[in-house]
Image 1 (tube, each protein chain N blue to C red):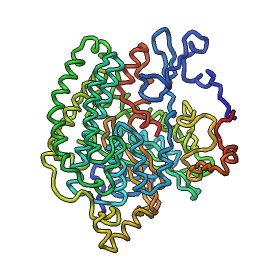
Image 2: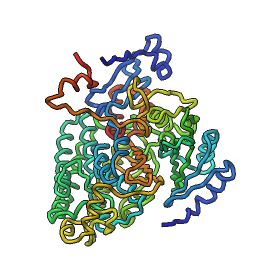
Image 3: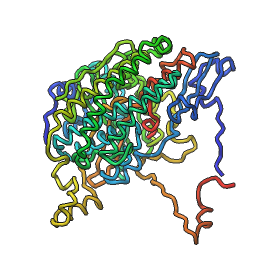
Image 4: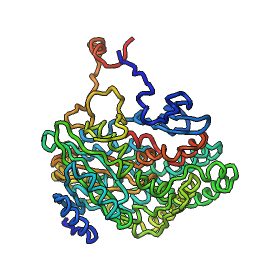
Length: 409
Length: 174
C-alpha cells in the first residue's frame, strides 16, 4: 500500500514570506492539471489578494528517466528517446544528439544531408513557435489564433510525414547524415509552404501585434533584466528579448548555417511583449533560411559512406558480404565510441540545447546529459512574476515557452 | 583530428593553471580543467568576473562507477558570450559521501541544477539554499542516475501465472 505523503507548510518555510506563516497571505496550488501551465507543471503561489508574492514551481510530473534509459541502449537506438524529450522540437533534439555522437566518434556529414537538416530543423522551429503563438493567444483569450496556428503547423507536420513517415516522432536525422533521401514531392511541398506562410504571418500580426487588448496584457509585464537572465542561464528568444545578442547559429555555426543570410532579432525591453515580437520575427527569419537552403540544396549522398557507423543500403546487402557483416554488426552490437566526454549544443526554438555525451569505449554511452533550455527558462519564473497579478502570471508563463517534456526529461 | 586551442583561450587557461594548479585535458576542440571541490567556487568566480564567462551552460555529473576515487566528475560548462569561448571545469569527487560546495552565489542557475545533482546522483551540495529533491518524489530511495541503480523492468504476466505475479506487482491494491 503506497503511503500518501502529507504536504505541510514546513517544507516550504524557507521559500515563502513570513506573512504566509501567520496566514496573512494565501498559499494556492496552480496545476498540475491546469490548462495554462502548458503541461503538467505545478506552481505553488503565495498570494496577497490577486498579487503574486512568491512562486514555487514544482516539476517532475513528467519525469520519464530518458537520460537513464539512454545509457542502456546503443548510440543508434538511444536516438529514438530524444524525440520524446521536447515533443515540439523533435528534429532539433535528433540533431543535437546526433551532432554530439558525430563529434564523439569524429564522423563527417555530406553537404546534402547538412542542408536537409537545416531545412527540417528550421521548419521545426516554425512549427514550435506556432504552437507557442497559438497557445499564448489561447491564454490571453484570442481563441482563433490557436486554430490558425495549428492549421499551418499541420502543413509542416505533413512535410515531416512525407520525409520520415511520422508526423512528430521522426528520428529522421541519423548519425552520419539523414535516414534516406527526401522523396520527389518534398521540394514542391516546402515551396508551397514558403508561398503561403509569409501572408499568414501578416495575418497573425494583424490580429495581435497592434491589438490594444493584447498590448495591455503584454507590455511591461514580466520584465527580465539582462543580468538576471544571464545569471539564471536563460537562453534563446527569452535572452534575445532581454537585449543580449546571442544565437548559436550565428556565434558557432553548425550544419553550414554560416552560408545562409539571416538576422537575429534582439530587443532591449525584456518584457512579455518583446518576447512575442522576437519570436514573430524569428518565424520570418527561419523562412528565409529554409528558402535559401532549398534553393541551393546540393546533390549527392545523404549519409556518410563510413560503413563502421552508417548501415549499408539494402541493395548492397544481397550482393556484398562486407555489407551484410556491417549491417549485422551495426544493428546487433552498435559502434564503439572513445572513452571520453564532449559537449555540443545547438540553438533550439527555446534556447541552447546542449548534449553532454560521455562514452566508455563500448557501444553504449556512459552518460547522456541533455542540457534543456526549458529547465533554466522556467527556473527564472519566480524572479519575474513577483508583484504581478495571477492573470499576468499566465501571460508570463506562456511567454517563456516551456515544454514540460523538455524540463523533466 | 587534433585542433589547436583557441588563441583567446590560452591565456585564460594559463591563468587558471597558475592559480589553481589545475590539470588540463583536451579532447576534440574542448578544454577540460580539473579543480578540487575546495577551489571550485573561487574558480567560477574568477572566470565570471575576470574572464567574462557570463553563462553557466550546464552543470551535471558523470558517474565513473565502479571506479571509486574519484567516482563522480561534477561538470561545469561555462560560456563566454563576449569572447565566444567555452571552457569546462571538472571536479572529481569520491564515491562515499560525495560533496561539492554550492555555486548558487556565483550563478543563480546553479540552484536548480544542483538540486538535480542531489536528486539524481546523491551528491551533497554544501550551503545550498533549497536542498529538496527536484524531479523524483520525496520518498524515493536511491539516486536514479547512479550507474549502480538498476534500470528496472516489469515482470510479464501470462495466463498460467497471472495471479502469482500480480501479487508481486508494485501498484496499489484494493
